[in-house]
Length: 251
Ligand code: APR
Image (cartoon, rainbow, N blue to C red):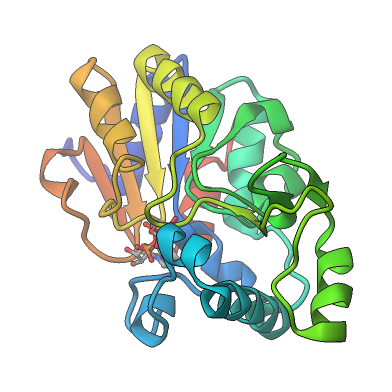
């Protein structure tokens, strides 16, 4: 560190020298919008066991439980808005400094903050709509909720297929198009900015590694330490909203 330069100063310099950054986000960028993350103390997985995809396919009870949980969580969280962290990322995209946001999140808040949908790569799908697993027909959550509240049955498509939230469950195939887009973005960037992820879930967590292996810088913004802190160029531990606002103050 040169002179009195702060860590945030080093992070700002890393960003200033970048011509084509990618932002990789996890649940931690959305906690300041009121959405709980998964692995912080008290996070979702400390209270709920994930329902994996094979279980969802095999068991009507699992399908009903999955929808019941989905609606309970949506009710508990309520209407959510992008926070300062999302808005800082959107400013970087609008300024042409970030080419894509690769996100593990399913909340749609990057798009809601103004990042064009074609710049958001959703590795784990999107929980703001539902989809038939057989014919891929899309359904609104309001439609599915009305049916579920009426009869408590796991919703089925007119084609007979099971309807599931538009997210990717454990054990479910990753979306091929998103995976290809994330790989291309990671290979083309000169800086990968990780925000709010424990970097524990693969293949998603492999993209910051891929970027770094191909010469990109790595900046991590996270409340807790991550397994890649030791090889990152700069690590900022703290709240994503305030750190990203400071990082992008002149963007
Ligand atoms: N600011 C900065 N970091 C934060 C904040 C915040 N306001 N809130 C939480 N964090 C950090 C936590 O310290 C944690 O390290 O964000 C990280 C979130 O990690 P996880 O809960 O593991 O979430 P994520 O990395 O997105 O999980 C990946 O796992 O369960 C699956 O599909 C799910 O997409 C999810 C994937």
